[in-house]
Image (cartoon, rainbow, N blue to C red; front, side):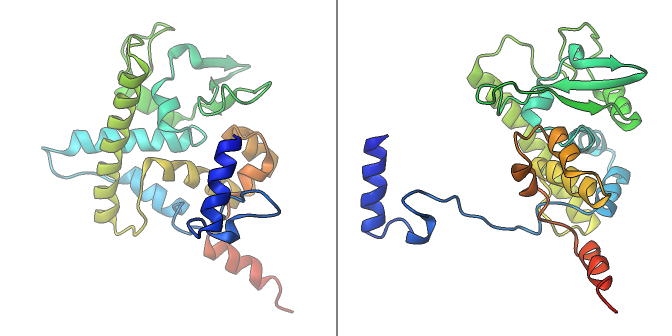
Amino acid sequence: MKSIRTVMNEARKNGYVKENLFGVGKYRIPFSIDSKEALSREDAKRIGEYVDKNPRTAKTTERYRDLWLFSYYCNGINFVDMLQLKYSNIIKVDDCYTIQFYRSKTKTTAHNQKPVIAVILPQMQAIIEKWGNPDYSKDSYIFNYLTGTETPEQKNNICDGVKNRTNTQMKKIAKELGIKQNVTCYVARHTYSTVMNNSGAPLSHLSENLGHSSIATTQTYITTLNMSARNGYAKNLIL
């Protein structure tokens, strides 16, 4: 770490690293707001209703569109965690079926991490029934891409492949629908958080659903409050 500090200080002194990235003696992560990170609820609905009229590509388009929608409905779950879901992650609580999982991104760093709990909506159940693994045993993956015998490198390659194919299909769908945003797998997570925030969900509830360790992290996800909502709030100022 001392060596890294020395390199960074030399880089700063010689102009390779911007001075404004440093606070009082330490690196400060740049902050930016990208208004294109999330879709509006209306655009997300249009994606859900999209139908590929080309019989040669319709099934592929629908499959990866549905994976994107599942990520959106399942608390904005990232694709790596989604592809590692097993039927054992489906847990009934009272009269409600849920998906409960630990985020792989924070599993080894967060102490006393709570599971992320997503209510299984009818849309999610329909996607599971349509594309899910027909082997419903508890140790089976819900989406039949992994087998559990892969090396970490093989697992990453499989997950990256699914994400890339999803991104390709979502780009095509967005273009046909006239959606200007670059609709990627990650946008499903931002869309979930923004739609929930705009619907009035408490920040604490949203933070728990996203699996964040702090509300401050959640706030970086919802900076893209849509302009129609901002306009509506601003009009409340008029006397």
